[in-house]
Length: 247
Length: 252
Image 1 (cartoon, chains in turn purple, orange):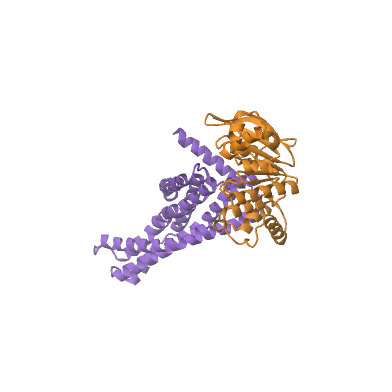
Image 2 (cartoon, one colour):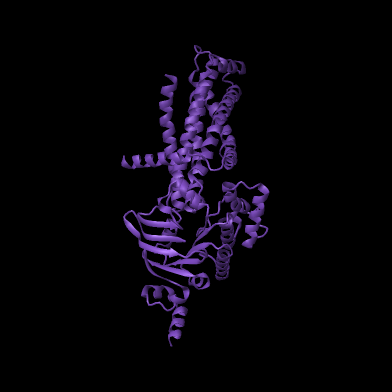
């Protein structure tokens, strides 16, 4: 418990430094653009692939579990849409990004720590925490909602392809289903969750990397911790946010 | 002048530096020598503020550096150039971007002026036609020279070098030593070099401070070092067989 509190205190102090006034906004702007590409744009591929198959599986499973003449088939489309909107796109995307982006951030910053690059920044008088972490936080907060929207679209598309190809639902029913009783707030809900998850993943991973001590072995450990801790925190906040936003 | 007074530093209860007091001479190449693990790097990092000290004082001219807050320290740090043991070049930046980094951060120069300064610094350390290369494409000696170019890009008043020739072949090590000495004289910098290489001591040392187990045991010039009565220092200086023979023959 004491260790947790110490680390939490360290985390708060680190983010006090991160959110202090940037030395040279132009340099931070360039760095943010770089991170948008590196952490955001480079994740589009994996998110697209996973979301497509996720949507396909959700549709097929919903179809096989509702094989009853009482249920209209358009419910398969509705089930696919709501599952993706409410849970899968934001949470599964966050867990995937915790693995991809989280480990990347922790190992990048951790390597900079053990190779004295962070010391070099500090010696120059640069606020290393802010310079290294703030652009990543901003980039993920800006780009992860876009990733979630891509995930939602591709997931529903994957469901449509799988459903119609397997012959479990007609194209017309699926499209009717995804339009039926649509609540726009669900998109807002998914975006709000994504913003929280983006901050959790980036901040925890950066924290793990920033305080690495030792060598390559410790960088590897920090990277693993970043993925584990950010995934658990994402799941915890998923419950809290769901209760707060949908109750 | 950089002045250290009664400096103490410990890690997890283990005393690493004990009551160190030393004046580093301005405009000269000051050397901190000692065995591996003697506390040289901790002392150097404490002087530049990378390690908080337990007690004591660190003065940059008439400014008590260790009592300043981050923003105030930043002003002093703009006058500091530092060469790290592993060069500490930013992996994601090219040679040119590495040297330009301090200029981007702390000056309002135009892009053309910055590039001109970068090229000047790179030429000064004899790095030619390597602007677009990345650190992973450079040899150990080149990395050190690029790191020196980055350290001098803002015309610092103080230059700190942590084991500048570790991991280099003897000839390249001498070139790096000579470069540090030349730059110190050229820009009238106060330079502090950490080393355990006796070649460096004899090549560039103007003032030498010897540390053993976190305690300052001796200070003086490179001429005085050969005639010192300090046993620990003699054990260190004349550690290899050739040096022992030379010492013995000089006594005869």
